[in-house]
Image (cartoon, rainbow, N blue to C red; front, side):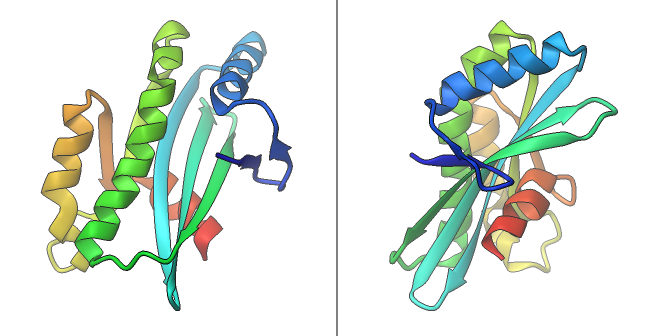
Length: 157
């Protein structure tokens, strides 16, 4: 799985080690961190592109993120695609959660799913929320889910 920084610089270490180093570095600089993980997708012709982001927030001092892109030819209904986005976020959260516990970093999983029933993505809200909360992670949906609806969205659009 290839990760990069927002400036395009490729991350060569395994993502878990890169995240560990970022936590240690930022904590040593005196920042209180919070991490938000989210995925967004965009259908482009026959392809569906997914972007997963790990957003590090330095309390009161901005933030930075690591990015992973993936394209597939698979065709999804809107509900399936929303749940695939959530699954991709959970996969990363699960891989990294012991680090967040070890270094006492708060973590949330953000779902690009609207809480307003008038929007199509709302079809997946209950399942997504159950999936994320069932894994023991904090959950945010739109409009609070900026990692997926703003950060990851910027990458796929």
